[in-house]
Structures are given as structure tokens and as C-alpha cells.
Image: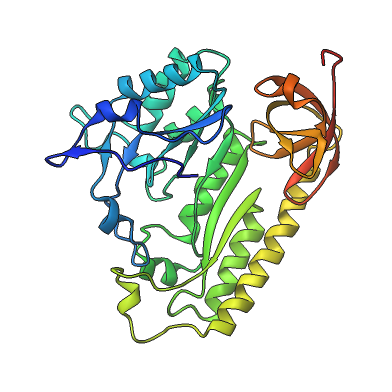
Length: 327
């Protein structure tokens, strides 16, 4: 969702005045706000540190000002962006953290605004951040926590800084604090040195968690990354393709299971768009991030919060009917 332009820097310091005019929103209901740029991690497959530089957190007051400006323009949902958003504030003096940012925004934003975020790093995700996402009323109960692989040796070669076991402890905390939360992740298959046994640990982790949505990728070497220089352990393309198919098949199974919990429930939806496949329907999302389609007039409903009774579960979406007669 990185629908934004690179920000101007002067002498290595972010020129924060440019943030109010540079971002590209891309939509009239939901928009994106950068809270931290760059990344200090050096995952062996990732080019971000080489292209976006070191972490630079934006002041909370500037972030709030941009969010309030968006609210005045009619936006209803804001997604906070950061390559490693849990690192927010650790480069500041005095130090701040992501949970403090969420608490600050929750206090000062109007109640018409929903807030989401991307992306957490399992190495740094704190209990306080989990609790804030679970408890604050303007913060949606959706957690984006990429795990990338399930095998500890593969994670070590990726230089991710956590293990299968520590990742599951994060999920346990999320499920305890916010049982109905949406949990989303990214996974890479076919990383150099990944054996079939190692790949099975990825499938095991997926079975343990059952993600609401999973972004799946087959490893491919990227210029200026450490893993691209390794001459041993590269996985054949046909093996990558097979493993990608298997994770996608399992992810779809779990996606449908996670959708089924909504059937028969009435949920609050923020209406975003017309259904591109049915002009008589509109699309919105639950607080947990599930897409919902239902009959309605986009000219009346866009940007409105409505209650929808869920009648049908699909793999990555839901079908429903308006639960009130206001529209």
C-alpha cells in the first residue's frame, strides 16, 4: 500500500514540511501517512536499507497535523506506514515508541476516523503496542506481522532476529488481548538453503496461526542484497513453484475458515467503493480488515459507516445486507 512519493531530505535530515503536500492519497475515503522512513535492519533478502536509508521517525505532532488535515478533507480511514513501524521513535530524543504514537492519535483524532498500520517486525513488536491496537477505539483490530519463514535456521539466514517459538508467543498475546482481531502476514518460500523439512515448519506455523490473509512470495535474488551473492543453496524454480502453490492452497483454506466466523453477525463497515463486478453493490471493510460486499448506492454510502448483516463467507471476502433502513 505504499501509495506515496519519496520525501525530500536536506543534508540527511527529513524536511518534514514536505509531508503535508507530497503524499499521494489515491482514494477519497482512505489514505496513507508515513510515520517512519527507512530501516536499520539488514535482512539478507531485502533491498530497503540500501534504497531508503536509515530509520527517520516523524514527530508525533506532525503526524497528527497531517491526519487532522485529512479528516478535514473527508478521509475516514488512515493507514500509518513504516517498513519497521515498531521501530518508531527509537531514533528520537527523548525516545518515543509506536504505542505512544497510537495513544496520542487516539486521543486527538475525531471519532469519525479509523486508523490502521503496516508493517510490524516480530523482533520488536511490544506488548504495549499489541495492547494499544486491541484496546484503543480509533485503532482497528488488525495486526500485520510478517513471519517470512517457519524454520529457525532459515530465519537465521534471513537475519530476522526471532524464532518460530517467539513468533507464536506474539500471536498468543494478540489472541489473548483481541480474540477477534485480523492477523495478516507475509511469507517467502524457496529461500536459499530451505529444505523440504524446513518448508514443513512454514506450513506448521500457518496451521498454528490460521492467518486472515497471507501475502505469499517465491524467493528471487535482489541486487545489492547479501542472499543474492550466495552461490550455494539456491532452490530450483520448479521447487519454489510447488512450495508457493502449497502455501497458497493452505492460506486459502485458512482464509475461508476465518471468514466463516462472521456469518450471522452484524458488523460495522466503512463503505469505500462500488463493487467493480456489480454496479449495484458497494464494498467496505470490517474493523478487522475483511472486505464486505452488499447491495447499496455508492453515491449515498461512500465514506459512511453502516451496519451490515453477514450472510455468506468467501475465501477473502464476505457478502451481506444492510442491517438498517437508513439508506
